[in-house]
Image (cartoon, rainbow, N blue to C red):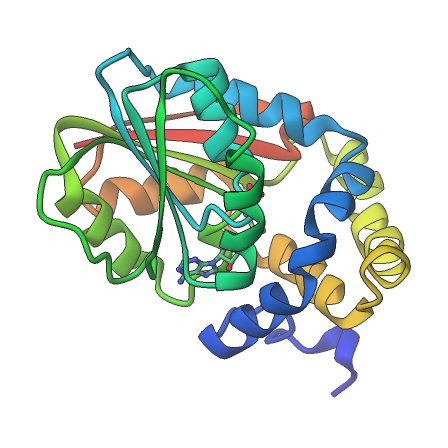
Amino acid sequence: MSEALDPSRGTPTTERVRGIFSRIAPRYDAFNLVSSFGLDRLWRRATVRMAGITPSTEVLDLAAGTGDLTLAIARYGRPASVLSTDFVEEMLRVGKQKAARYHGPTRISFAHADAQALPFSDASFDVVTIAFGVRNLPDRQANFREVRRVLRSGGRYVILEFSRPPFAPFRAVYHAYLERVIPALGALIAGDRASFEYLNASIRRFPSQQELARELEAAGFSRVRWRNLTGGIVAVHVAEV
Ligand SMILES: C[S@@+](CC[C@H](N)C(=O)[O-])C[C@H]1O[C@@H](n2cnc3c(N)ncnc32)[C@H](O)[C@@H]1O
């Protein structure tokens, strides 16, 4: 079967995902900025707004990578604390360097954590966030169970992820961009075309807005809602416990 037709092309496995992110960590931020035309910053701010953060909120940021959502939460949400976690040290290291330049009221800390088996006690956070991470998890159900366990009653899971633009002509243009431009940019900026072919394929095979909402409900979350951003290229889902 050709690589282009292989349905497993965008399938995450722990080994594959760790390998990709440990390789691209130093170039990850540059790639993000260029490939999203800077829109990722607006998407993160919208995510923070939807998280309903107050000065006493304790936030856990999963698959936090180089810390862009963690820092947006601290800057624009100003919660009591945000714990930035990931299972790739190279990504967390970049996040720590960036956080050293933050001087606001939020306490930012870092921990190594697999989003599918969290090393935290039950009911220890008010908000759990994940940006562009849930798509990379081989076992979403395990993640949903773990997030429900560590959230306090009334807490929220806030997911920013690539999604499915509902307007078909726009979707076609976007898919062509994913197919042709993203791997080429990956090769140029990160010197790693294969990883960005995975990125494209993983976006294409990820559930739509409605499907993800149904999965969250089936996992026991309530009041599940979402907002499309940039024509549905990404969506922010909010689910409560
Ligand atoms: C596309 S990056 C997103 C990083 C960051 N949240 C952002 O918005 O830029 C995906 C991150 O998920 C992390 N990741 C993937 N699977 C994970 C897992 N099972 N547990 C923890 N982190 C994971 C990767 O190491 C990587 O840093």
